Length: 217
Image (cartoon, one colour):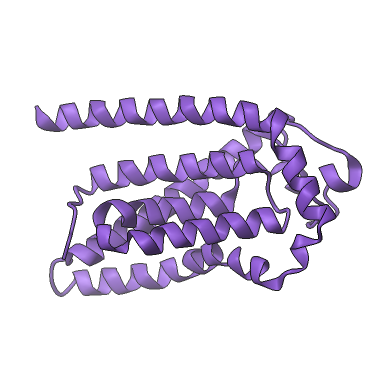
């Protein structure tokens, strides 16, 4: 019975997060996205190389995930997984699942990017192209939700819940990626909100399905 209640509670929390994020995204789309994008562009904030390096954190996590998965599988053949390994496995699987969901959402929403930075994509800053084009595919329509934000939150949300003493690392990593993406004009604020929401929700479900317990040691 307790597991049923837990799953229902998780569903309610997810629903509240989605509704809350949708409301914020709606307001951000009209009031925040354009001013922030033009501010960073007009003040040449993207000239700071450190910001670009910050955006590489999710890519690094995505690259190292297969190596960690092999290590976990090999270790599993010799003994049961430790709490840390089980947490890593949850992160890796959640990352893979979340990436697929993210790709589907990008196709559904089909949003233009804030700046032109890949394959001469039409953008707000260069072409005054702004908005959503539902069910459009191609690199020009993949700004929403932010994949980088989705990746970092899908991993760090699990770390945040399971290892409270490492919350500083989870928070700092997420903040660094967000600042980098906005500073480089890679994403709109609402793209990031959507990615953070998606990553957080899938992270909560990963913790639940893997039965991960909080570790304060």
